[in-house]
Length: 254
Image: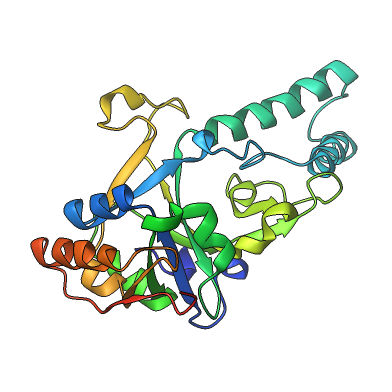
């Protein structure tokens, strides 16, 4: 796990906030069986604005092109050439999405009724509670580099983000998703010779499973407020089968 000095410190969560991750039954079983968390490729996200540049950010690139001319770094700049330079930036950011894998968590004081309904499969949902320090320690011994970052929410129609770094767009989301209060784990696959990466060599082409220490990661396990009483017995049996000793309880919303 890479610490806060490995990323822009301005994006690192302040303090040690609680983090929550919601699962349906299938994904939870995969987690405890493999002792690994799935990181999804950014270009496979349902939200197509993920990792893209806002219109205002594109205008910042136009000003950057004008600066290159005024500072004498390049000679002249036709509209066609300026368009090509900006298109190259957009294309590079899009390729960068294909080598960036994300695991999403939610920050807050307590669980969220809305997130239970959206992410956990309603009556068979499971949530794990952790915090920033636990998450960082849980990935310390993995071979892959994992960074932790807050997500900032902006209006993709009018707001601009910083330019000059491929990492900035993957730390922003449209304000329509601000209710998530997301903290994300970021992993970049090892690629050579540019951004194209042959995902066909991976077991899963939509992302990667990354090993994690579940004993360090999980503070407690909470069951959906919509789950029946017998669901707790099934989850308890699974925890015993895979050697995971953690507190198990129903949501206080039940």
